[in-house]
Image (tube, rainbow, N blue to C red; front, side, top):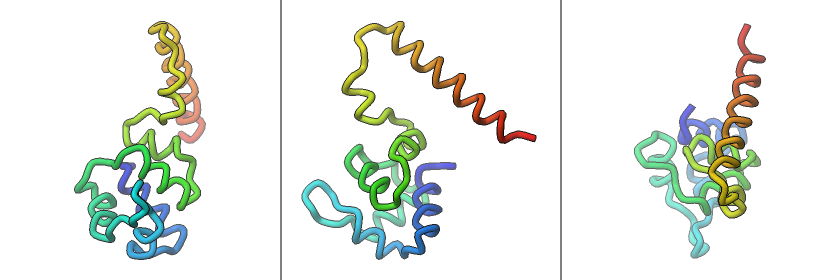
Length: 110
C-alpha cells in the first residue's frame, strides 16, 4: 500500500469526501489544503507531504502517525530528534524493527 492509498482508505473508512477531509487538514499557516492537492496525494501524483501534514492526516484520520510515516518512507520526527550518535545503536534499532516487522508479517501469512 502506498501513502496515498492509505490516506484514501482511511478517508473512506471515516466516510469523508475529499472536500471534507481537505478542509480539516491545515497547513502550518492555518489554511486548509485544497481538494485537488488531496486528490493528487491519494492518486500518488505527488510525493508524500512533509512532517507537519503527515501528522495532520494522522490526527484527523485517527491513524497512528508512525504508519503514515512508514508508508512515506520517513522516520517520524520524535525518533529523529533523539537519535543516538552511535551508528551501531541505530543499526541495532533497525535490526530490531526488521525482526519485529517480519514476525508480524509471518503471523498474517497462512
